[in-house]
Image (cartoon, rainbow, N blue to C red; front, side):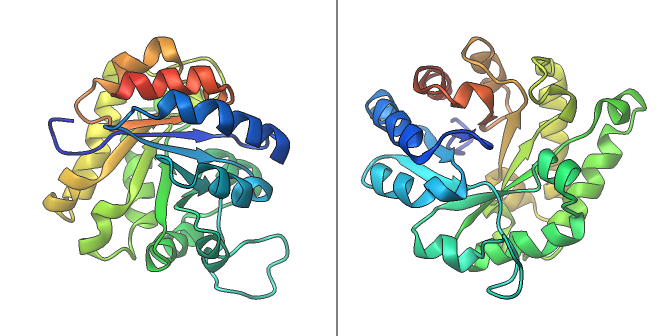
Length: 253
């Protein structure tokens, strides 16, 4: 990219793919993205597939991210996984704050305030999701919601590390609905997120990668990825097929 930010295409598999299915997917994906030298590529499988995916993708350009993480190193947190556990597997990063985690599982901005710096401390890349609901957009509250999420969730990240965080803007009304923000809506929101980071550090604002997420597919990826403040995509359904995911990676190159 002319702005010096390497595009990142990340596939969030959500609760899909057994380990065997994940193995088949990565075998099909690796040759398809082997020449995508200008693009960072990440897959985000379930916790059960992380070790297998790290092993299968080792030596390739595909990184492996978890879909969630806890902010404590260890403790009585049944069902949770710590940053150190991910780090030991050579996982590269983790999604935090996905709207499904916020809405279905009660993830709070207070928890994210702890999770984001904890990932950075563990040498992992945080991929922080933010975005508004349809009701919030219709009420004109998109900017208020983004200001709140960015302000709260990144509050404890030191200024010099802000640029290391990846932020995914996902309009909740466009996730899994087939609806896509118009290029104007996507650019406006991503530029606003960058300005929010810039209010703390202009240098970080130029470095931070902001992804668009919400029904990204091969046929709309090129238009979205060409926007000046969109540095990649967090892909849902289209990341479950190697061919369609690779086509989106190609569009980012």
